[in-house]
Amino acid sequence: MKDFFFKYYNRFIALIWVVLVFALWMQFVNRSPLLESFLFVLCSLILAFPVTTFVSRYLLPRALKAKKIKTFAVGLVVSIFLLALLLTLNAEMFGWLEKQGVFGSSTMVSATLIPLHLRFFSLIPASIFVILGFCGIEFFREHHKISQENYRILQEHARLQQIHLEDQLQLLKDQINPHSMFNVLNHIHVLMQDDVDLASELLVKFSEILRYQLYDCNKQYVKLKDEIQYLKDVIEVEKMRWGGDLNVDCSWNITTGDKEINPLLLIPFVENAFKHVSRLPHENGYVNIQLEQNGNKLIFTVENSKSTEHTSKSNGSGLGLANVRKRLNILYPEKHKLDITETDTVYKTVLNISL
Image (cartoon, rainbow, N blue to C red):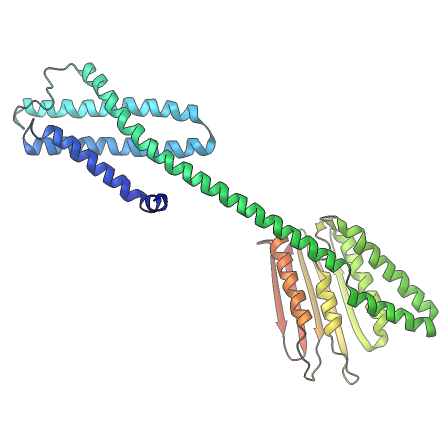
């Protein structure tokens, strides 16, 4: 029933006005000519409608939202006296028209029998009844709207909490990537047989990566320069693993390294490039990484070559990018743009983000 009422709220209000006018007209129709009583009720409506609507549809909702009930009470009292004054003037006007012979004499207004100030005070109860009646209806609607809004806010809060927990879980998963860890450790194991110095250097870099992932990334934000250093360490490890079989070109143009960014936000693009770069013996694979900062604006571009031979699409890559998109939508809503370009030989991602 409530939903039906609020759905057709304006129609209900219009119906109430129609009933109110009809009831008022029925009181005067036997006390004056038909035309005069109709015009008198019509003029009363024209005067009462804007005052009542202003109080109930404008003053009341604003007072409830701003919690300024005292201000509304003052406006309500002023509006009641204003409406009583307007109705008094309306009755006086019709009394004057009767005296001028425009309408026949009637008992509807009795302008010559009631002093102006007494008519004014006699119309105050009617003004109170009309204005408070519509304010009561509007208050019921506003209360319902506030209840619905509070319920929506609670639902949104619960949804954001759930999203935050999911993001934290995803961040924990990103902090420890078993596939990447096993690859690096296996490579270190192999290097220990042939090149102990290189294996030691790789192990040091890898320990710095793990330290950053496990400890520094526990904060909601990290400094941009720390995140970039982490990316450089990861890239250096990958370059050591690949040796001369892969061309890696990096460009870092940072103006304010103390800007903050959510941790591990950029690394999936780097990992994806090294994971899916062309690696066949007869192909010269490459990975190009470029990061440019201009104030709060950050442009991160990662491009890698793809194998010219047919390879099956990796579900892991699609899932990783889906997680990145999800994190960006949660952490930087309306503040980022991610463009992905893919051809038969090139895969390129460009991330524009406002920190």
